[in-house]
Amino acid sequence: MAVYAAAAAVLAGVETRQGSIKGLVYASRFQNVKQLYALVCETQRYSAVLDAVIASAGLLRAEKKLRPHLAKVLVYELLLGRGFKGGAGRWKPVLDRHQARLKAELARLKVRRGVSRNEDLLDSGCKPGPASQVPRFVRVNTLKTCADDVIDYFKRQGFSYQGRASSLEELRVLKGKSFLLDPLLSELLVFPAQTDLHEHPLYQAGHLILQDKASCLPAMLLAPTPGSHVIDACAAPGNKTSHLAALLKNQGKIFAFDLDAKRLASMATLLARAGVSCCELAEKDFLAVSPSDQQYCQVQYILLDPSCSGSGMLTRQLEEPGAGVPSKERLQALAGFQQRALCHALTFPALQRLVYSTCSLCQEENEDVVRDALQQCQGSFRLAPVLPSWPHRGLSTFQGAEHCLRATPETTVTGGFFVAVFERVEAPSSVLVTEALPLPEPRPSPVPKRKRRRRKDAATPNTLPCT
Image (cartoon, rainbow, N blue to C red; front, side, top):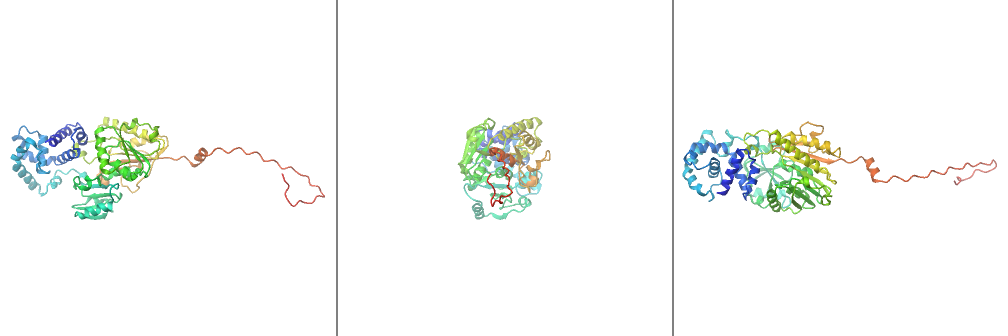
């Protein structure tokens, strides 16, 4: 019963705008965060369907003590989920009494809408929009396996491998048990949108990471070399950290910071399952980390993915139905923190490359933050031109913004995202030579040659005279 009560509480909190699903789930102190998060998201996804079924069956009229949010969670589990497994407590007999009526109302709803599957109800008046067409991206964890072995495993399970995709349209139309290799990332597999791999043995063993393609871009574009030192400034929940470790081949060092102790504990579990051994976790505010600390004197790469409004997250439409752009006050507060964090990161003395990313679509958190940071770093960093074929670029709000990347379900078939890559500007070669080499010692003036008188009777010498 605990998971259903916790899910109902999260739904109630979302409805009253107390926070997002993810934030409320982590704040719930429920032990199995993934189970709770999945249950809440799926219940919210079918919210309109559940409301219609519950109203038609008269469940809340008949059971006065049953609260609406709890009723929605319980009916989801009964009709669309995995069914009760002894965890419904005192409400199981209540739902059993209404089970036949609830199932009948669900069947009538399908008939009225002319569909046969539960999923089709979402496409007949309850369609959530372009986000529902984003496929399931699965990153192969190269610390434990390789893409070829994972592909062979899925083929033995009856999946049909379609090879490397050649266009975004191929990703949109994936259906059934087909899957593809992403055209950009060689370790990223692509499955149809509704594919659920949370219970898959490869996922549970840490061989697979369920991570959206846009979320894979920051580590890929940072591209740290094995053996180097990296800072992951706002690290939890840890998917990008595990990606960095895979790129490093567990050689080198990742310093990962996050202020939330609970999220950091979950991250430690994720990294252990993924086989990450080169990461040092710290419950610490990145802004309090001193760039002059000898511990970080070799850090050449920083990944900064700070807290943001989450306006590009695929689950946002589920978490805050009908929500618009975040308030001006909230955006200002977030952008202020993001800019401070970015400018702070750019002061690390050995830094050569930095990736700034958000899962926001708001200019205030993206182009505006990048523009202001470039102005403050006084020409020591510039934006690197990356992925020239990427179809969605930064907003043209300042010169060079076209080097930034944006992502949306409509344009890139991914979640909403923003990425900017900073690289250190090397001093001109003449300056480098001047700084690297000492000034030459002044050379003594050459001794002037003495003029010699030639006697008229002297023979012309066969050699030059000594001076």
